[in-house]
Image 1 (tube, rainbow, N blue to C red):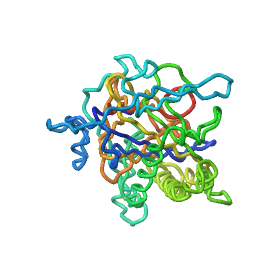
Image 2: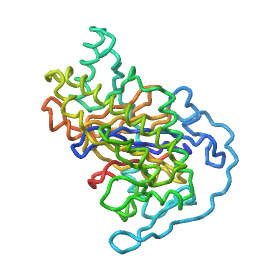
Image 3: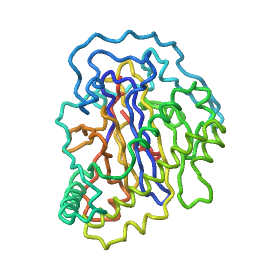
Image 4: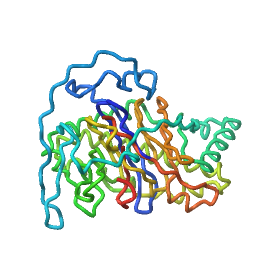
Length: 378
């Protein structure tokens, strides 16, 4: 899997949530445009011009928007845990791609392959008594698990307003001045916090993105996400923390519902996966892809597999996700209101009925993507 930075799309956000020390689930959230930031570049062939049609295709030529020239601010140096300075890039202010972000042409070039057809599964059939629909959903998921490991879900019960609030909160955070975001800077060796392009971990082929991650556990005595935001960023961020607390709770509910469907699809005893993953610790990850001056030369995230059991991705209608199938990078078209589900390494190890996992990446929107701290993706 890889996230492709679609040409000229001004902004993308990706958030992963719900992964665990006993790896459980990873939930993602993606948005492509900063609606209240008119200075962001939006060239005439932007794929965002067809957002209403949920298409990744470029629009017909149209007059470009007038843009404000970016203020050069290449990077700042902050102390690293090992005693040496770690570069922190302010990507929104970069007039050109710094050398550490350049990827080899054969890795960063856009794909020309056809879209990957992934089934859209109605998980509501688990609750509405539609037995024929349940058999159909189970067959769709079984087929996806045996091939590329991707499917999309609708009827999931996650309120659209909550998803929108989570996207807006991420957008608001990443619009903050760099110094403010650095108050939440991730300490090397830990999971939670803010990072800029993982420059503290890698020196080359950096991903064109910023991330904010925080943990979640629904068995905690207090709202852990709210506590993280107020303890790290201050009381002014309590409302944002409450949005993400609720979003993480809904992602946990959805992940357990999907586990029930996987039980049916793979012929596993009812309740086995749900019980196994019910007491899990999770992480929510928000990835932001700033406007990129040369998206064909970099990636929002490099090719990777998720080490968790399950990935839940909420993306907007611009997309950028690509999956490697039969040697070709195939884009996955966003479906309005649906969430993309990806079976991860941990789940594949648990069940012999799941086929080989497929790499994915995210492309740069004038961007690619990564996950996790195991070094396989950036």
